[in-house]
Image (tube, rainbow, N blue to C red; front, side, top):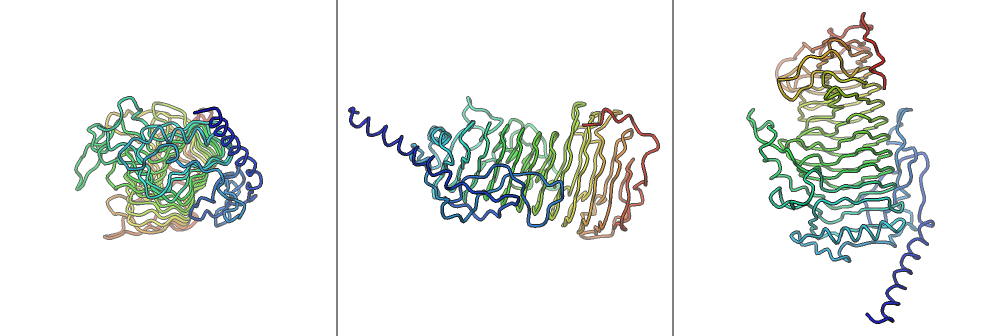
Length: 478
């Protein structure tokens, strides 16, 4: 390249950066105090706003978390001036060539520009290997998937030098959005057959499952995140994980994986605060949504779940660890054809607490274990009885109705021998058999609370008041 061409190229790059950043402030508007309904994303729907209070369709409880909100979706000044198309960086999009290098270059360029959009264009299939998209980046970054994005086809094609624990990782980011009209495809079928972890097969049989299988999408140590409108399917393991994050809005998400795919949780959060999950559909082979330790201020509203293992808090307290979960709301949700409905599961020997949990306005459709607290969770027959446990308290079940699978009682409170479950509230719980006769023997062990209305089936085993002997509570404080 001669000096004249080189000067012209540098001038063009500088001009593009000035043009992009110069238009940012004119395009960046926010709704204050409410959550904007996110319409199907388009190239004009760009940067998420910083964390502001967000309101679902119905008035949230006073404890509703503060989560990000989109800019005005129809703002005519919200134009996509700074698009970094991965095909401009060498991505072929034929589904067979490795496009990882092009995605990394596009990320590097967009990361340095405020309110930039990384575009994965439609009508193409892009294959990339395990990649960490790392920040910090300029705020307002949008990762827009309109085509198909997928990993290599199964463990035999996975590069030996790449991590088999995770595929797409978004790390140390603030004010970022993952959206699009496309599909993130996990190619999980061959991973599910690995002979490491047995799982349930058809007709009660046992089939192999994954051990060293990658989680599909992971957000780590990030804040003010929006995931909207994307379709995710066939993950080798967990579809989407949030760890060490704060201020997360998930809306209009579609997750689908076969019912017998092992360990394919839809959305898993841990050590993450201020989360809203709204108006999404999840069907998979494990929990639709699983909430691990260190989570608080989580609002789940308008989710359709199943077939699946339901919505779970836990498992908590493994290896005698402390677990703290508080202020979780699940409401206006449908759970169908699932092994569990709403579940709290803890290991023996843990400490800490699960408190301030509300399950409200939930429709069950042919569900095993519609309402379950299991403080004896164990993955083998070798777990020993232990005296300590995570304290489960202040749990509300309101307006939970529908049908259950009669193979198990629809209500099951198996609380610790030494650390009772306390302050359980039951109101307008009406569960009838999908077929067969009414199972009228809900199970309770060391569970205390009240029935504000008559429960169907009757739950006479729930003890009123508080236990006579209260274990020293200091180890259960969080």
